Amino acid sequence: MPLIAIAYLIFLAAPVLLLALGSFGENWSNTLLPNGMTGRWYAEVASDPSFRRAFVTSLQVVGTTCALNLLIGLPLAYAIQAGARGGVRIAARLVTLMPVAVPELVLAFGFILVFSSDALPWLGSFWLLAAGHLVLTLPYTVTALVADMEQLRLDEYEHAAATLGASFAARLRDVTLPLLGTSLMSAMLTVAALSIGEFQLSNLVSGFLSRTYPVVLLQAFYGATGFACAATIVLLSLAILASLASSLTARFAGSSKAEPVA
Amino acid sequence: MTLRYENVSFTYPGASSGVFDISLEIGRGELLAIIGASGSGKSTILKLLAGFVKPDRGRILIEGAEVSALPPEARRLGVVFQSYALFPHMRLWENVAYPLKVRGVKKEARRAQAVEMLRRVGMDMRADDLPAALSGGQQQRVALARALVFEPRGLLLDEPLSALDAGLRVEMRDEILRVQRSAGIATLLVTHDQEEALSIADKVAVMREGRLIQLGTPRELYETPVNASVASFVGQSNLWPGKIAGAGLVETAIGPLACETHGRSPGESVIVFVRPERVEPVDAAGMAEGPGSFSGQAAADRYLGPIRRIDLMVAGGLIRLETHQREPVTAVSIPRDAVRLLPAD
Image (cartoon, each protein chain N blue to C red):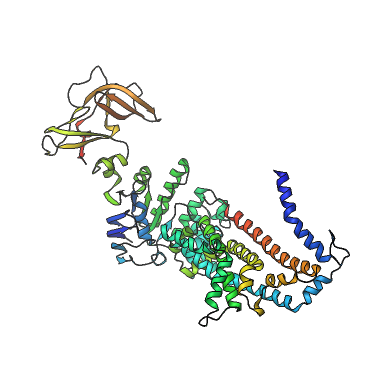
């Protein structure tokens, strides 16, 4: 078993290590490892206008996607948890999980069909891109929040707060949000990690000026190897950062949940 | 300070369970316990009063004003939940002060009030702790303090002792009663534990399948249950199917018993009910012949400390009895005034 795990880790890490090596290599063609050592590829990525714009666009899309997830995901999860019973509950879960089951390509083609029409000519706009990312990431937010709400027994605390005289707004402020804080943070970082690396849908629905970083990245591979490696490492660092933060907060949310209640 | 249900009915959406035509009243300072098996609708009664569910028919009144359509936050009722539901992110004093906070009481004033309330339940030394640091019994006390600090119009207790150890349960039972009495507040206690209900309630309501089958004082319920299901739910009992044999005599599988037949006609089917402590052990040698005298072998003899609970196997069935006597029991007598007739259903 340990052997298999180690082999798998090497298989997983080797491309990343090679990318990192390549990004600092002066010249890399027809050899196993690159020759020379340079930081110029990073400088070139940083000064490339299309990469700069894409980087900023990606951050904007991530930010918008997180905000929309919060605004829509939290009430949705709350409604499912508090209101829905039996069949309605299962149906609500199915609908929110649908985008996970449907391939992103299908979703993107749907977007192209609907939003390239004269009635809804929004294909290529920033907001449509953000909406696409929202659809793809919302299931993760809702699933995580509903699970945490159930585990936290949020409905009981809500009932208790209500009997003590707290209005809906007061309950949200004093009970729901403080109890769900770490859950929300963890869900948002997961969303960020997913959104940063999203390629399939972005590639099909983004416009020339709203291309995200992964979309522009594809073109880097038609140029110098070192440049492509450096550009990829930038994306990878962002994604790893978000994933790490997400798993750390998820762990924290888990440990605060594990406290004995009774 | 009265809480009232008037012909209240409620059915859970998409289910046939609920409560049907419930009328109850809890006076000022009175403690009404609702008992019943799980699924009998007793928790629904509490949810209706708390405002978590709204009645389909009938009215719920607090101090004479109808509240059926009001949300929980507008009813001003203190509720102690089975799991206590203390807010895990708030210190004890913040938990107790929360109802004051939402009513706009200033921080210093509400802290002082909360600590005073914690003192009344013996928890003021822990005011700055978080709930997770407390034992079940301590959480219970804090939950009680939180439910009473805002001078509610009624106190609702949902299985408040079920999560506690047996020893602590009796202690907390007395504690709840003491606090409830000193607050002089109308209280509804929902429990599946009939002993708990009998020991602290002024009145007890027995629920079965969503219906209220008997409402009375603990003594009435124990001595004069309206039917066999109340008799078997409240305390231990002997219940034998029987037929009226004549005036003052009923025939059962174990033999004839003398009793007050209240003008029932011969041949009528009844359930014969006798509490085990009313069955008297007698000396087998000097046993009188005739109705109400039986002899047999002990099929089970349980030593419970102050008493023994014996199942005496006699010709035709089993007689359960409880006795202080330490000697073996082989013959018993069931006195005429110990026998009650319940409707056969």
